[in-house]
Image 1 (cartoon, helix red, strand yellow):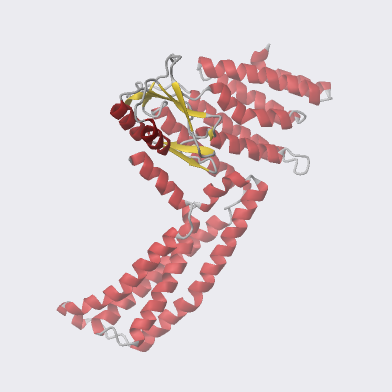
Image 2 (cartoon, rainbow, N blue to C red; image 1 turned 45 degrees about the vertical axis):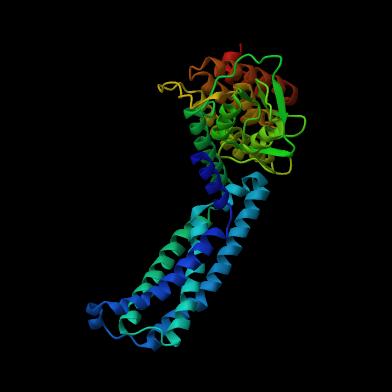
Length: 416
């Protein structure tokens, strides 16, 4: 249930209307709640605030906040377009979920709604002495929130959508997904064993990407029907009638009922997501580097920065941990682990292909492979050595200068 709620939370963060709608409701409630101050006798001694002075303050907010909200939306749209054009469209969900920008838009819209409703209530004699004083304090509070939010947001919007910020945001999100998978490499399931010849494959009727696997639902189904389930479609897998979601190691009498409930345990959507799919973050970073290395852009610096991010992420994944093996929470569901070969393919295949002719990129790539191999993980070291050899092979076919090629081979210290 927690994983499902977390999944919904991240999807809601990608919707711009959620926070402004919530703050509008809170603003309306706050305006009408100010009248309740008249019930407290000790507030009868507060200063008598005139209706005109309050009207002036609220009119200032009403006149400016709608303009500010419009300006905020325009700036955010420009940042989204910049990120999609300069980096990759796959970064859009991360950019749009930026908390600072959403909070700024929320503050401006909320202040506008507060001022409009407050003016309406004030001009219709809704408040008495204590109510007007309370509304004044609320108005000052709204002013303070708007000013602080604006100052904070101006600094953020100057960076939002810029290449460096986008790479950093993708790296941070991918690192969080990797850490969750490190804590639970098989999503709480057991290790995959030998599959019997009588195992039944179950396919998806919905075509799209697996965004989440509800392990608790699969465990409940396995217990109810007394079966063993082997998941074959991890988050990020393209589900189709040709790709089995899982294999069932037993016979099921009520097959239709089981299949409907089973497929509902796999959340399938049109696009991949970052939270439960660490490989997607590697793919997005690789796309950013690939676009930077295109002939029309030719930005080796961005590619080198992305290589650094990818090396940090793969070292995080390959670094030995002192933690004990994760507890098996779902003993009837077997789940495969992520493989180093697939992760290296996601991270470095595009960069090694498109940057084969750029000596500075290939040298940094070789240094990255050396750093990953030095972590001490045998599986990661073996794949890093193989990718180092492939990169040198690509460089030999793309780099014409013998001196540049010698520099690349020298950086590939462990390929000899």
